[in-house]
Length: 244
Image (cartoon, rainbow, N blue to C red; front, side, top):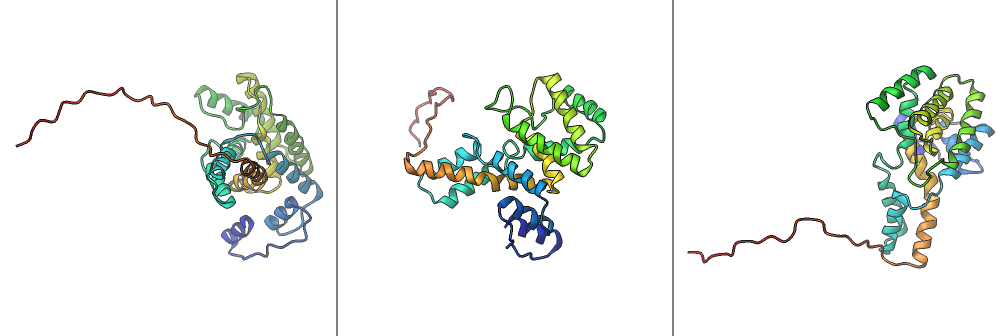
């Protein structure tokens, strides 16, 4: 559905969505580029889909489980999860990382630009993690694939700029790259348009959402957090006098 929309929106062509591809990664790339992808590209995409597939009680997963706990249908729960990705604070970090990386032509320019952002206390997406405190173990894996793809296509800019940004963030803020940071350059090397990064995340994460929905249904209890009122104390009102 995503690739059909993309091709129609871009060229007006109505593509056939059936391929002989043996897995989602190769199927996606073939529909995107109109030809079978190389083994290197398919493997890189497959690794990315695995890494993004499931990750604890993030906002979208918790949303899916909350909706599922009401005994809503499966599709409503997944749609709610997609809605949670509409906000830039969840799901759009790899897009933001790509926007940052592609601003710079050289590692030195990247360092100067990032230092200016930090000086102005701007938020830099793609670094740190709510669960991981010292490092994101997924990041090292996708970084390796970003490097392989960089070498395969003769890139002398994107990966080098990414590495310098990583080094500066470690030095200046003690922050490590999360999965989203090197996923950005990986996707760019695969020829994936930046606006498709988050939808691709959805394709992967649906497997994790599904597992959570099944688990919620197997031993369901309505997810209904309590709330503490922190507003003003009760106020004294003047009594209503008789009216003429």
